Length: 278
Image 1 (cartoon, helix red, strand yellow):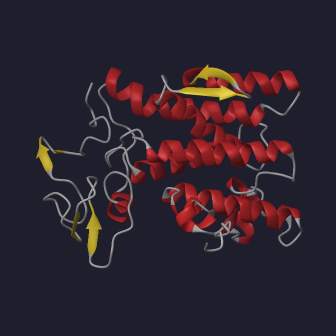
Image 2 (cartoon, helix red, strand yellow):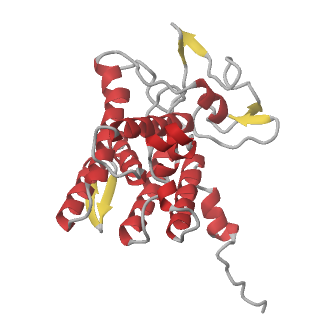
Image 3 (tube, one colour):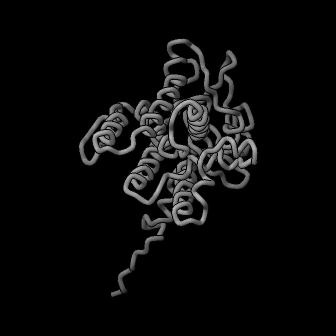
C-alpha cells in the first residue's frame, strides 16, 4: 500500500494558500495583501505608524505623496476589531468584485469596481477636512464597500455572529452592534455615509434624473477590460464571456472598448445596467 500523501498548506491543487490567493479577484487580492502588509509592518515597527497616516500638510510641504494611499491600508493595532475588519474586507470586497458591480461604463466589472474605490477614497479625503474622523481610513473604506454591496445585493442573506440578517440591513446591524458594545463606530458610520453617496450617484440619479454622473475612465477600461478582469495570455485578451481574442479586438470599437450601439452609447454587455437606462 503506498504511503498516505500529507497535505501541505501551500498545495494549490488541494485548496491551499496558493490556490486561495490565486482565486481572489485582482483588486481584492492586492488591496487585502497590501493592507495586511502595511498593518503588520506598522505594528512591528518596521515602518513608523505616523508615516502612514493622512497628513495634508506633509503632502503639500514635503511632497509625501504616499500618504494619499497608506491611510487606506493600515487597519490598526493587533486586536480582535482589526481581525474583523480584515475579514470583512476579504469577504465583501471579494463578493462584490466577483458579482455584477454597479455599471458605470465597464459592464459592472473590475474597471467599475476600481472606479468605485477611487471615488470612495476621494470623498473620504475631502470629508476629512470637515469631519472629526481618525487619519486612518481603512475601516471607513471597508464599510463603504460593505454598504454598496448591501445596496447592490439587497436580497442576499448574511449573518452577524450566526444571527441571520438580510443584506440590506447588514451595515446597520454591524453599526448597532458596535454602538451597543461600546466599540468605535464613527468610522463605520462615515463609511456607510460615503457608500450612500456613491449609491445615490450611480443608482438613484440615473433613474430619477436621467443623468449619469460617474463614468469609469478609459484607462481603467483599457487596462481591466469590460466585465471581470481575467489576466490574458501573451498576445490575447479575454472577453467577458471567457473567449480569447487578440488584443484590441473586444467588440468592434478596438482598444478593449465595446462597440457603440447608436446614440453615442456603448453596449456594455450583460454585466450591469446600461448607463442612463431606467
